[in-house]
Length: 131
Image (cartoon, rainbow, N blue to C red):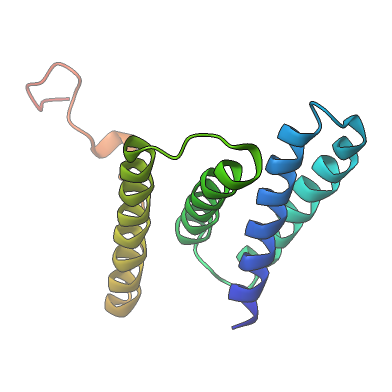
């Protein structure tokens, strides 16, 4: 439970920093918020990973929620358009994160770790499959 609260902290810090970056164009003092926000975000994310949340899951949720919140809040705060195309992109991001999360849970239930295939076990680049 604590890991998920830390992840929320990472997301909110990152979104605050990103929105402040846009606001700093007109109010340079906000660059302080940008630096602090990104530092907090990465700090929180590191704590989430220390608590055992898989990197793909933590990063996927962090990035996706950041994109969704930033897009929605930039429309509200800065009057940026929130078009059907943006909404479609947000939905695709959410679906992608859900797929990563489901895949992570299935791998943990089977007691397997999803590891990359070593390069020596991949077929040759010639397309013949022979080394």
